[in-house]
Image (cartoon, rainbow, N blue to C red):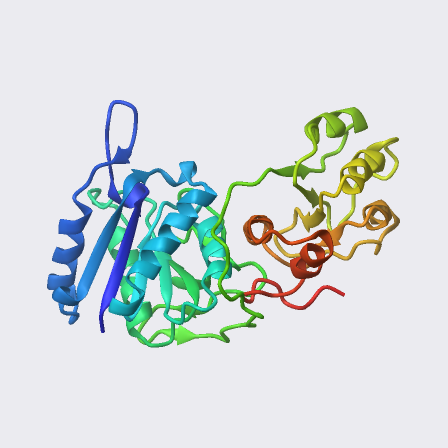
Length: 335
C-alpha cells in the first residue's frame, strides 16, 4: 500500500519558544523513523507534504481547508490512502469540511494529531499516528475520518471534548467507528449521503454565529447581526428554542431572513435533534423560515453552511440541502 501524509502544523510538531509553542520539530525525520522501527510498511512507499506555512490550527480558515483538499487531489493517483496531521483545536471543523468536498475522492483520509508535542516524554503523538496508520492499513477506513485517543470517528460526527485528556474527541450522537485494541473493534459505519460531484473550492463567507443566553436583548442581537451576514447560525436551547418573551428578538432575526440570508438553528446540547415549533418557545424561529440542523454537530453544520455558500446555491436549494446528508453528517433528511 502507498500512503501520503499531509502535515498542516499543530501541537504534534511544535517546539517551545519565548512566545509559547510554535511549529518547528523535525516531523519528517520522526515520522520515517517511526515507520522504520514499528511498522511493516515500506517507508519508500510513504510520501509527505508539509504545507507552507505550517500553522497553529487556531489560525485555520476555509482557505486552509482548500489547501489540504488540493494537496490530497495532487497525490490522489499515486497513493492508496491518506493521513493528515493537524492541530486539535479546529481539527473537527476541517474533517467536517473535507467530508463534503471529498465525497467522490474514493480513498480513505484519516486525520490525527496530539495533545502534547512529539518531543515530550508524555506525548500521545506516537499512539495517535500509529493508530491512524493502522486505520488506513486495515482496509476498513472510508471517507474522511479522525483517529484520536484509541478511537476512530466519522469526520463529520466528531467534536473536540477536552483540551487535555488523551481521549480528546467524542462523537456524542453516533459514537466511534472503531476502537483500537487487540483486535480492533469496528462498529456500524453509519449513514451515507448523497455526495457532491465537482464541488467548487471553499471560499470565505460571512456567517454570523449567535448563541442564545438568558438575558439577551433584541438590541444586542440586532447589533450582532449588523451589517446583515450571508447566513446566520443560531445555537438555540434544547430542540430549537429561544426566549420568545423578549420583545423584538424574533423581529431581529426576521429582518435578516427577509433580506435573503438563510437562518439555521442548531442546539447547544451535544445530543439533540432540532425540531422547530415543538415548543412554543421555538415557534418564532419556524415562523421566520429558519431551518433545522437536525442532529449535526456544531462543527458539521458550520462547515456545511460554508460549503453550501461556496457552491453558490440559491435560497431554496440552500435550505433544502441543510437537512439532506451529503456525507453522512446528519441522521435523516429534514422533515
